[in-house]
Image (cartoon, rainbow, N blue to C red; front, top):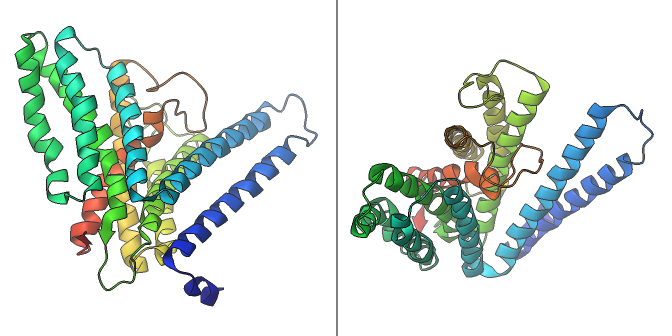
Length: 332
């Protein structure tokens, strides 16, 4: 089997990865469908609820894998555009729950139609030196200027801080996911396999979040931070990070890292994603909402697009810069 996989070129290896993932999803979906025909007690509400959660998880997984497959199949440029669209809709959800005034219109136009496309254009054209400082330096100074020129000073600092924070999370954070496709690993025979690195990041972070959520559901404990989350506790978080890190080490064969390096990279990504998810929960509590999107049930309690990608928005830049500098990786 190993000899067969090594005989494939990089594109065929990535295609084989998606073939395996889609195959596992087909098996899980067929199993879930067959489980609905099993005879159970009509009042076994817990079993029916778990089965409904499983089907919703599978539906979300199908969508995410299909999106990543489309991004890989259509090339690096289309993948960057795809993640740009995800950032656009995530930022729209964030702004929808952040009250704005008429004086913010110029700043909002600047954010959606100048900053966002320009940030992803910098990624697509591999201008990494500017891409990493464009938002935290230039945009953070330009937005308050645009607001000041509108002449509206009411709650000026609060309005600008909310918009800056939304751009930082939704645009800056998400733009680091397609940037992984452009990393180069000289001397490690990894050209053309960067899609594995995106898969690695998304898989370990989502696995960490899912395990943390399941542990919190199965083993009810008092919340560690009740003012922020009614379900979060440090025990579940530790189990989730441990599971994601071990999974990362197990997946080292699809990365350019040794197992201990993959373990460390996965640990950093999981911790960043988990704490980022906690930060977004605090923001939702501050806004008095339980989700960023419409109220529909899902396996993790996530209802909007931003609920599903918030951990990734925090994990991606930390993972990117960890890989780039701490592991001596170049861009190009």
